Length: 112
Length: 107
Image 1: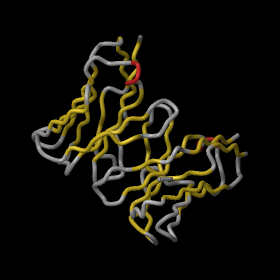
Image 2 (image 1 turned 30 degrees about the vertical axis):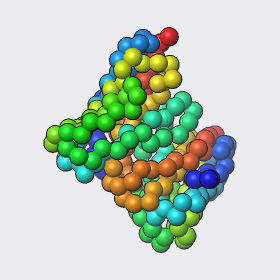
Image 3 (image 1 turned 90 degrees about the vertical axis):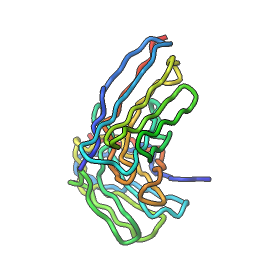
């Protein structure tokens, strides 16, 4: 059982570069979300989706785009990387609105 | 926005001591979930509480949901080094998490 798969696991970027963090789940979950985790800040919601074709902003959406063209995939795009976006990024999914979330292993992103 | 506040932010205990973290909301919650994140790992679901006043136990862990469904607690009896990590609460039908309590257990 793959669950939630995030790629890459590690990435180093230069300021101004763009990239896409991939997230895929094989549990047919409707709900997916992206979080960033910084020391002492907990898990902060970036964007979320309640189904294919539907996305919405969380607490810290600036500088990030998402799309949900299929149920399985929920990529996160950094448009122009900034050092403030250095963080650990987690993708999560769940079947229904009140069910537990399943997390991927995370992507550790450094921006120089 | 974020519905739940969590205290304390950090806790250091001697191995064998008890530990409690609290989660508080200004609004009534339909349910609450607890997660544990080991250092370097990802959050893992522990339990969900739904009913007013509900108490659930998992070995040395006791979870409570307040009568008004606005607060919850996680209590660990006789901590062990394997309990090290950050414990998060989350309003079950939301995407938002509390800020977490980081537990350090000193052998």
